[in-house]
Amino acid sequence: MLQIRNLCKSYGPNPVLQNLNLSIAAGEIYGLLGSNGAGKTTTINILCHLLQTDSGSITLYDQPHSEATQSLIALVPQENLLYGSLTCEENLSFFARLYGLSKRQRQERIPACLKAVGLANRLKSPAETLSGGMQRRLSMAIALVHHPKLLILDEPTAGLDIDARTAMWRLIRQLQAQGMTILLTTHLLDEAERLCDRLGILKHGRLLAEGSLPQLRQRIAAQEIIVIKTAEEESAIARAQTLGFPHRRYGEDLAFWLPEVMELKDIIGCFAGILLTSIAREPVRLEHIYHEILRNPPVAERQADHLCTNSSTLSQLGRGLG
Ligand SMILES: Nc1ncnc2c1ncn2[C@@H]1O[C@H](COP(=O)(O)OP(=O)(O)OP(=O)(O)O)[C@@H](O)[C@H]1O
Image (cartoon, rainbow, N blue to C red; front, side, top):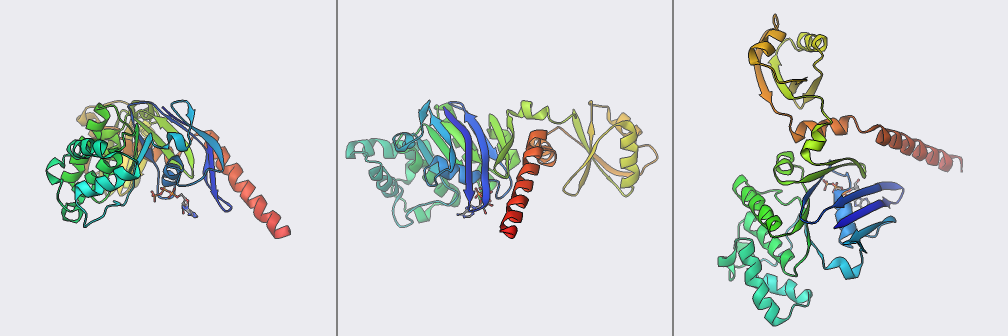
């Protein structure tokens, strides 16, 4: 339903989106991942016409994205934009009027949207009396009021406790089940892994990889990952090298990739003679895949980065010479 082609955006001399291509199918939950500054919010702001693109194209249902198709998209931004002293009903009513809903449409939509987000009994509660999780859900209700087809959620669970987060995940799945297409950003890889049908990994405004979790998993030549604690790390790494087990550091953890699932006694046997404090076995998760894609981007991206560095060095040289 959504196609982004060769989107470019710079702030002054700094490229933020560099030939970004991505497509989202109707009814899917697409997760856009990337470190701080990767370009996720810029992409969202362009989709919502809050920012202009330098070049590239966006189509929605095969129509060029314009003011006319803007009402098909709704954004729930990172910060809740609510009027604290107004009730839930009044907040929705305010935004429904902005979208031009008639009194009759408002009477139908407002209770329906509050019900959809689990706030049916909060119609008359001022927004400021709601918990953080409820305020997030009220923001979702506001986004739904004009019947959008694509819901964009910018870090939907940032700052929420685990109960509120679980409620939000349930709500997102319910909306998908009702036919909504969802684009979300998150820094929580377990959240992305649980929720998203497909994922895109952005770095410096370029999409390094895209696909479902099973597709992305093919980037890692491991069936299982073991995390080892030992005072003899160098010996463990040297032993693993002789066995052909690549090693990685995930934060503080020293991990090895196993090319096949092995019995625990065989794994321990591989490290015989090295004092191990603990061994933990883990399935290959999005966290590992994400780490690997950022660490080893596809060759084309490395070349593009190289060219980009060279061209900015050249332009700096040019400016210096000028
Ligand atoms: N108005 C602006 N003027 C100049 N640079 C900007 C502006 N807005 C964003 N940037 C820069 O563009 C880059 C991408 O920012 P963006 O907010 O899109 O990243 P992000 O992936 O959403 O990050 P985060 O995860 O922190 O929200 C950053 O380097 C940021 O500093």
